[in-house]
Length: 72
Image (cartoon, rainbow, N blue to C red; front, side, top):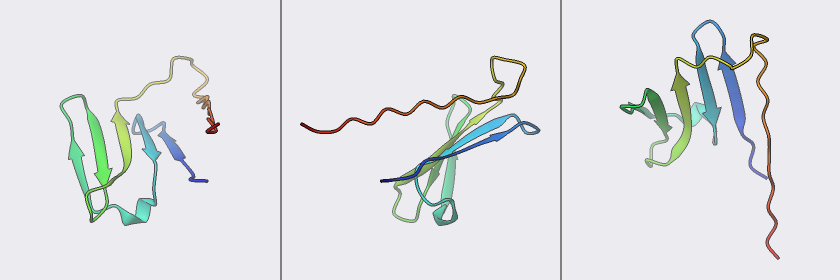
């Protein structure tokens, strides 16, 4: 099973979601929606980062929900 890595930087106000190996990052592209897309050497997206991220609650906790769908 693939692992997803979520990093909430409370000082920098960013939320990074890695779908692949972060050390494989080769290039980043910022979108007009203040989202940074991280890609590997082959151009595959391995992560994205939300800029100016602020959690809805004051606790700075981040809730992550997973849903696993199995094929029938």
